Length: 412
Image (cartoon, rainbow, N blue to C red; front, side):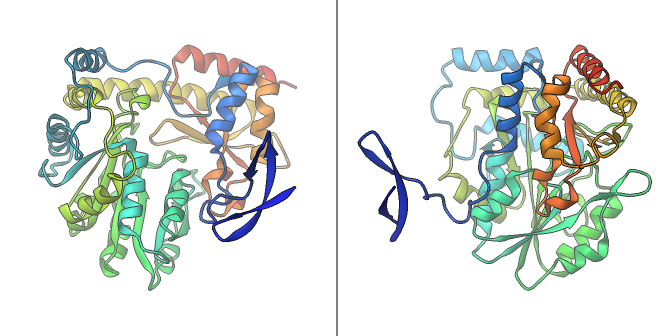
């Protein structure tokens, strides 16, 4: 072992051939994040040949009209840099979508920016609007990029717990939400419909959040990528539609989940021009632009008839119901999701240790099925240590195969 100077400090190095490589160079802001659990579990699925119900991507292609539009764009030469805010055809389609579904009026020129998926939009928002030491209120469990994005902005995540009540519905304590506000609070980050719990925040819950935002002069950033995936007749309500919230809410969504094109990474952010401009300022130094031939195709998707959205929800609701029934039958405590791609299950009836990480690492070898431990979605991991998440955004025959594998794996 030898030492070299990195950023003004001595760090240990290891020898790679004739090159000495530093081993302690990761930023202190990102220390501890490591490789995402999705990469680990997907690699485990490949290595074991297991059915991958871990990562949330569909196993069917999107609507033919959308795919054909992408092919036509490529053949038509739309393969160079698009404009920084996104192609006008897609920004106009996003504006029309928000008007059609939520009666939200937006200026496509100043109030919409296309991004490399919702994840980049979130990163742009956090980097563009937070200063060192600012605090962000987040509901946990949360999508794992939230805490990383907040950390990269040198800010601090302040969690508010979502937990199942006696009826199995995920709820939060309004008193905990109010107590989370401090003199350093800048922003509330809300995900609805929610990943990983599948919760759809009710209008009354949204009003509680809006009251806190307005009372303390905060900014709201909402992640609404599952907006079209609410089940059992539930309706997604954007936070920006509540009184007083339009001028202080940056709304983020994407087409990957809705149109089964997660690999295209086409997302967007919309809202008042000052918030969009702040997020765009950071976004331009991340990817700058992306996905030129996919942007007109996404515009086609956003204009599909209501029957498409209804049919997609019905198909997902059917696979949800089949997977929940299978998990119930083998002994999990399951929480039927109101929306999204995922169902959360408590492993303790099957594993008294309640260690979800170990459980998920062993599950492919026991059953040939991959899940994701919910612990990684919590700022306070002890709250989710005993929970795991299964994805049901798969063809019914895949869910049936997973159900059979789970039944055999947990048979006495």
